[in-house]
Length: 105
Length: 169
Image (cartoon, rainbow over all chains, first blue to last red; front, side, top):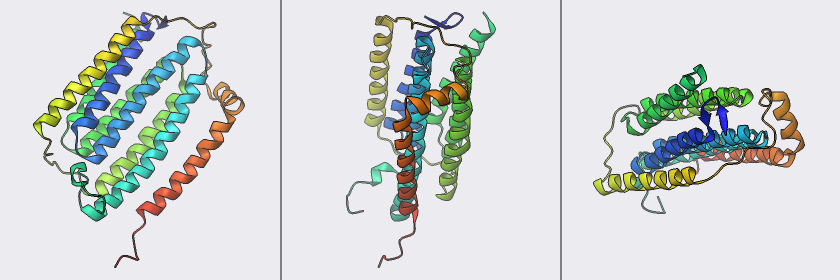
């Protein structure tokens, strides 16, 4: 199951798991909405590493195409998310997610 | 230890260390810069796995576009000074506990499962734009077109949302 000499698929999965768990940790820990977005990017990239490793193991390029689509979705998500954040800041003067506690704004 | 092994461990260490720094640094601008370091090390991993086109796209899209967008918004909202977040203590404990448990679940899953090798080993040039483009335009044509529709919708949405409201009383 070696991807590189002496580096197996498990090494890559462990790396991916660590990055994903760090992303979860950041989303739960930080209250700043921009930081939460960055941690979501971190999680998406952790999944991308796993997909590329699997594509390498199985000798199938489809995994890399999936990574391509994940990047597309991440870019769209960041564009809309940051626009929402700008709206939020204009109305509330903060990006703290704890300030968002009523629906009418 | 061979050179690729050293490269793998170095890039992994760099990625994990800078991911930690993203989460723990107080200043959002530093977080963005550390995230760029993380993305570059992930691009290095792609290079090691022979996904050259993906590595190039990753650097262009993430370090070039998304991070500039983040930095721009942070500068525009004037968040680039250190600010103390008032995270409650039980939230911190809950975050640590849930992150550790998800890590535990995934690690036990990975170490217990067995893996089967694919039929043919991957060719060295499979990650180049020529081969990737063939797969993308042959097998994944519909998702590709849908992705462009998604981008159009995201663009319209972003422009509409960030427009200044003029009809507000």
